[in-house]
Amino acid sequence: MNLRMKTRVVMLVDFDYFFAQCEELRNPALKDKPVVVGVYSGRTEESGAVSTANYVARKFGVKSGIPLYLAKKRLEGTEAVFLPVDYEFYEQISDKIMHVLRGCADSFEQVGIDEAYLDVTQKTQGNFEAASDLAKKMKNEVKNQVGITFSVGVGPNKLVAKIAADSQKPDGLTIVKPEEAERFLSPLPVNRLVGVGRKTGAKMGELGIKTIGDLARYNTQKLMELFGKNVGIYFHNAANGVDNERVQETGAAESISRISTLKENTRDLSVVLEKCNQLIEDIHKELVRRNISFKNVGIIAIMTDLSVRSRSKTLETATSDIEVLKNTVRELFEKFLGESELEIRRVGVKISHFAKEEAEQKRLTSFFQST
Ligand code: DCP
Ligand code: CA
Ligand code: CA
View 1 (cartoon, rainbow, N blue to C red):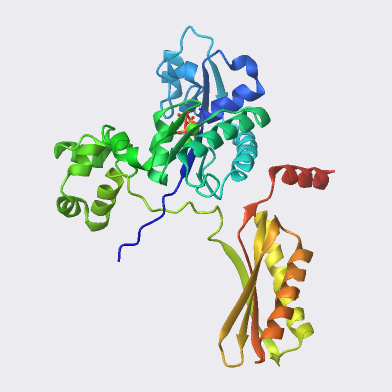
View 2 (view 1 turned 45 degrees about the horizontal axis):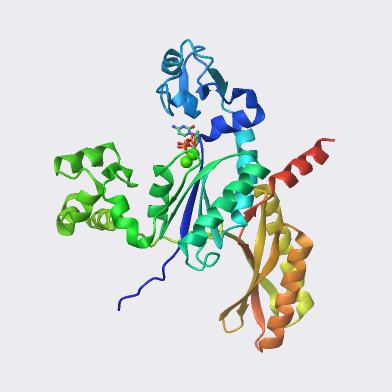
């Protein structure tokens, strides 16, 4: 059977020259100068590598990964400013932007500190013009609320969206409709595909595969022989712009659960809840330690015939409140006992659909703790 997937609209947002742009944000006087953010290894004053540079510095050939001494040399005679990485500050800015973006997506997947995938298929009703408008709105909102620019790629899947975003920077917006994907990808160098590094790129070069188009036309069977079955198939699909990978809601795959056997089989709500509350205390400790909030609460009941039943509820908003957790578990078990007849032998509680606690809230909490 040919399972045809509905056309999706996927965005990749990538913040421009991110660490350096954050530095410009807190010190706008830097804007017209070359700005280099680096990790100083500490051995000598000059040793270390460039994390990133603003676009003024890039004109002088300064980019991520090169040694700092080389960056200094290339920027000799300019008003270049060199700064050490301040990851905590960049993370605060990142959290603010991610918060705005999350609100614009059907599902949202953060990838590292400066990138996120958004599935906006429903929000745009599958329409790429609507996606373009949405992307412009996102750019304005983030510019106004946080003061940072980013580049967006819009495509029918993550693979095309990512390459689209990379193709126009900074402050870019690149839309690739499904019917344009092949023509868009075809002339690009093959190493633009994830998984084609230096070694693989060189091997492909020897086979005469220079562009993504070359790879798309290459015999699939041969690719499988050369790179192994799975990788060969991946290369073939990727080169043809085919990618069915979902935008995976950040943290959606994670859960915390606890399960325990009751002293005796029962249908008594208060006995069940007494045990559940012990489990909840335990779950809550881990929640606090990991500084996350949850949006989904589940219960598990193993009955006297050893059958496993579960129920769950999604909350309106994410929370880390233990009382909300207790009340939701009570509500679920009340309902469950009304629907089942057997006695319960073991009970479990599970929370999932995590979100990181808001940076704002985190700062407040640590403020109150330190006073
Ligand atoms: N980074 C790093 N070392 C590298 C590459 C990146 O420390 N070798 C850090 C600094 C970057 C951030 O990760 O600001 C994001 O990396 P990107 O590759 O997205 O690069 P930029 O955001 O700096 O620039 P661009 O405008 O090209 O996206
Ligand atoms: Ca990036
Ligand atoms: Ca970036």
